[in-house]
Length: 427
Image (cartoon, rainbow, N blue to C red; front, side, top):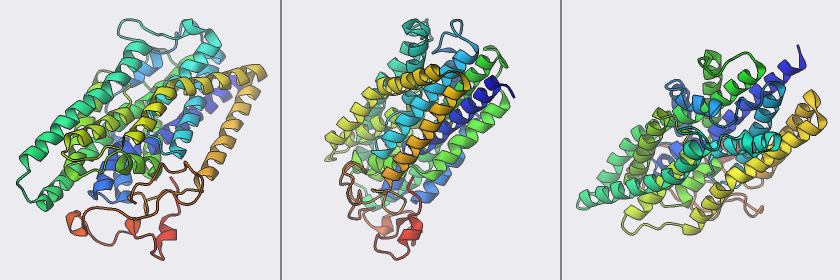
């Protein structure tokens, strides 16, 4: 096995690790509102989302083509140099995903990936190595513009939809309304999961295909290999099935106190926008789209409280995602380049593993899991480093309002003697 082939294998593994972190980082996009309203039990919700992410990854490859050909100028770099850029960009994206997961911030995994890749490209080739704008291609057209427009459009559509729902149902029995909309949420949340798989899994497919082009085993005009599609679909589905509870809590309980009609409006809006973007090959941020939709439901529901400080922290994370992930990607490339060759890649890979381990150990101080994800909102998990992130319980208005009001192990009260066994995982 040659050194370049070994580097390719490391890049593929790193890409699948990113896809895995994308899964548990973005589970909240599809299921946070359904879990918050009691439409789905936490563990059942994430498993359903994982399965639909798997299916969605096979529905389209337009976004993968955009990622593979629309960021790095392939005529300016090739071979081992391009592999090093792709690898450094992936590491930068993973590190940002893990850091924002620790603080429960629903930042964009897509922009973390693009930021890491752009930063590594600039470090290696200069500003001219990035396709900033080229007709319908380029960072500006395919990434920046959708990033600005998606949350605004989602908030507007969701606010109008929510206002209409409450206007139409204002004279109805709210218990009946809530029960009906919870059933509707099962379908709309499933559609968001399907859309997420269609959009986000393809980004990693594009990155792996870019690595194959660098190695010389594929050409830009070649179709995407089936093994790449299958591997990325399985990786994102596995990550999604873990839960990503810290971010689910922020989106479901932190921004707006979601009711079933709001949940259905947010999910329907998000699914429509994400599927449309996938059709046109736009690598949209599902996180920003869903957050915008949730914000819109808070604005559209009479008397709803929007926690603007929480939104402010989210927006700050959004603004800094591209530059900070880019900085991380640039540093990783510089370190790998300084050491050189396979040893440089191995050193950066070891740093990634060590940093991921430290972040996980830090997360154990303030665990968030299926048993406490619906607790009353107090703060972003992990921001103070002392005690649990949540203290008191808050769920649906009554068990009778939920679709299934049986004894759910995932939602047992904190004092339940069985809770420690159910809280074993901290994702």
